[in-house]
Length: 424
Image (cartoon, rainbow, N blue to C red; front, side, top):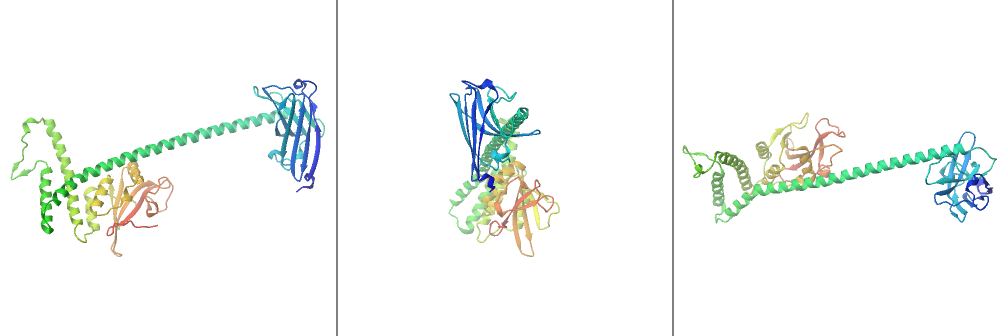
C-alpha cells in the first residue's frame, strides 16, 4: 500500500458561483475528504440552495487542465429547507473506477441537473479549486454531453438486443409448439396406419384360433382360409374364361364404376401387403425361425426404392429409400424385429423435414456378420442425434464431418437377435 494513502485528510470550502440558485442568503458549504488505511470517505454539506421539484444538485470530482477533463459523480445532494448533505465512500487509488487517484482531482463542484431540459450551459451554484481557479465549464459541457450520448446509445443497443432476444424466444416457442403439433399429428397418422394395417390380421387370427385344428392341420386350415379371404378382396378376375359380374351393374353409373375400380385396386394392394404379413408371421411362429439378411433384402426390394446415398459407397452395403416409416416398421415387426427407438419423435421430425429415411443391409462374409442399417437424414451440428451415442454419422460427401454438411445418423441392428449394436 502507498504510504501517502495510509492517512490523508483535507477540507475544501465552496465558493458561490451561479447566484441565481441561492435562497435565504449566499450559497455555501464544504467538502471533507478522509483516507484511512487505503479506504476513502467524502462528506459534503451545502446550505441556502433553492429547492425546485424539477431540479437536482449533484456533486462532481473533476480533474481538469488546459487540454482535457475527467469527472466522477459522487452522487445526488438531497435538500431539505435549503440544506443538503452527502456521504460517499471511495477507493483512493481508483476513484469511481476512473483510473485516477484522489490526489489527481483539482476541482469539486455542485452542478444543477434539470429533468425538463438537456444540458445547455453548465450551471454551477458552488465550486472549490485546489490549485487555483481555471476555466473548465466548456470542457465539462462536452464531457456531460458525450457521456449522455454514450448512455443513450447503450440504452438503444440494450433495447435492440432485448427486442431481438424476445423475438428470438417467441420464434423458438412458436417452433416448439409447431414441432409438438407436427409430432402429435404425425404420431396420430402412424397410429391410424397401424390400426388400418393390422386390424384385419387380428380378426383373421381370432377366427383361426377358434378352430380346433392342431399341429400341421391348423397351419393348413389357416393357409386355406387366408387364400379364400385373399380371393374375396381381389377385384374382378377371370375364372375358367368367364368374368365375375356384379349383380347390381345396371344400378351404378360409370362414375361409380370408376371409383369402385380405384377402390378395388387399393384393396388389392393393401391385401397383398397384409397377406405377406400373415404368411411371414406364420413363419416366425415356427421353432427357431430367424429371418436371414437375404430375406430382409427381398422385402426391402418389394416395398422400397433402391438408392446409393453415399458417394463412393462400400460393396458390403445395399441401400433403399424409405418413403413410409409405417411400412419399414411393419416389415421389421413381421420379422419379429422390434426396435422402438427407430420411431421416436426426432426420427419422425427428420422424416417430416426431409421426406425420407434410408434402410440398408450390411454383410461381411469373412467375419460372418450381417446387420440391418437404418439411417435418419440430418445436417451435422444443426440437427440432434436421434439415437444418442449408439449411432454414427455418415456424410454424403467426404469422410471428415463438417458443420452444415448433409448426411445420415446410422444405427445397426443384429438380424439374429434384433438388438441394436452399441458403437459408442
